[in-house]
Length: 265
Ligand code: PEP
Ligand code: MN
Image 1 (cartoon, rainbow, N blue to C red):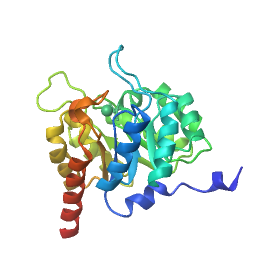
Image 2: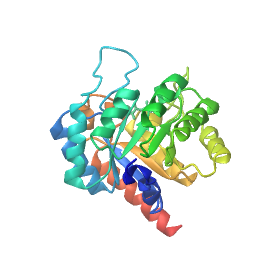
Image 3: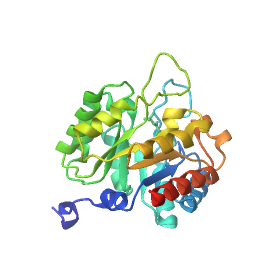
Image 4: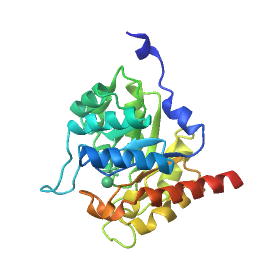
């Protein structure tokens, strides 16, 4: 085993030690230009990690399902140009293998994957021997045991840096939010796993850019360790989740206000 493989990952903890962690970028990488422009802009807004989905788990078929492997090249270029770590969603062993090959710094597991112990186990097996930080979204249904089960499977693969991402839960009735936050579930997770950092994803909770700031501030108020926010240089024309993406300028306002509250506190 190489020395690099023996070393424990410390990227996530060193970022979290500096205060709230802001991960931002488009829902999907669409074109090289869109991704690179967004990456530079979200860096200027204060984000510390760049996100972009390249394999997109769309609820119904027939829509844009991501650019695939070429998006990993664009992400690697975004990392080189901005100096920021990069993350993408993985949903199976092939995704993990490619993401590791292209030097992704962190991986996240989506809400539609966390519901399936088979899928999680496949990802865990593919990760074994590669200590990369993994962010695990809650399952789409409000089942804390499934969420904890996914965390345990990834931990058992030897991953030392794990965080939960709270992205809200599917409901039959849609009122204000696309995925209502049901805050008691991530708060219960925090009680059961006190050492687990939790990041909030206000974009998939809200489904609408009007609520991103409110949910972000609530999450930080509840003691979450960071935010993952979808930001796009031209949100209205985004190829996925257009209604909930915000401009890098709007992102900057949210980040700077949270940082200024935090200083006052
Ligand atoms: C995403 O982050 O773009 C995504 C698909 O999220 P979720 O798994 O929360 O639906
Ligand atoms: Mn999205």
